[in-house]
Image 1: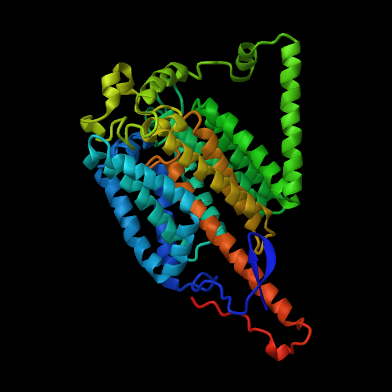
Image 2: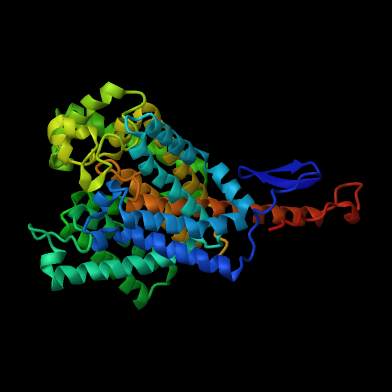
Length: 479
């Protein structure tokens, strides 16, 4: 009998069992790795810098200007690099795509809503970007690039971009600062600059975990702290609180996932009882929810977002189940300003997004689309938790895994006050698609390595009545 692993458990399988062909880890050719690294650099740099230095539009604007030549060139070029990689490891690519069904399902639903929107020829161009983003991410994952390689290149690019932003703010304040003295760097808007600073600070903080304690690690943590201070300089209250929360929660998640499901359940129960106890104490003390909200958040309108959300909710109720269509509510024609239902709702026409990604998905893809988006996020968190729970197989595995989990958490939280998840061209969405595909690849490789180890161990322990010569050979997984 052969041994296999399913969902983290060992069981016996019939001798006819063979793992799927072409999904085993192997040494990739130099051409694949060269194409993969070129594609990775292109997507990381575009995700963090955006089109603004070349087109004059900030990242948020670029995400709605799907018809821009630069955006088209980036994604078509990215897919042109990705397709040879996908076809060279086609079965691995198919395996990863099948396992990513929650993400592909929500993109498929978004595509369907774009088809039945009032102007499908316009909205389909925007949803097509999501498919191009996923295809490019899949190309990176099958090229042989690891999560550690992603972390290293992200570390370098984030450092260069942040250095340029800081130098622009100091040396060219007319370009690096806005009219109110807030840092905007090369990104054109304080929110975009704040998002870049959050991503850079998280990347450098977790990258420092590769090093033992010493001068180099302290300098690296100091740089991460400087990037964190830049978040304050952009005026992004959301980003500054979010980065600190993400670091704390990721550290807890890494510790709990290594200890197993029972520790996670125990911690969750304890946290729930603690929150309940705090609520009971506050109620008995006569403290109102408004007082608590003011003490925690300061501004209960969330810097003017509450009136916006109320107006958007009125629009949601008109197309509750299926939404207006992906990309159909806000402008999708860029500077042309020729389409978008928001223009018919007075001041909404100048906003451009709901400043809450979940409301935006509800508005444009309906309750069905929102439910599928939450399902895909839940799948990503499970992916991250499973990876954190696996013992590291190579040096620097754990810092890269923690960074990947932190990015998922960061995007899920940031999406509460800004629209980023499943937003075409958005820096966080670009990085997330690649991270998820690379996390899948690492989990798959770990599973195959464990299967091979189990087969070797069982081959060295003959079953009663069966000679060593009668045991099955270790399967050779053809690449």
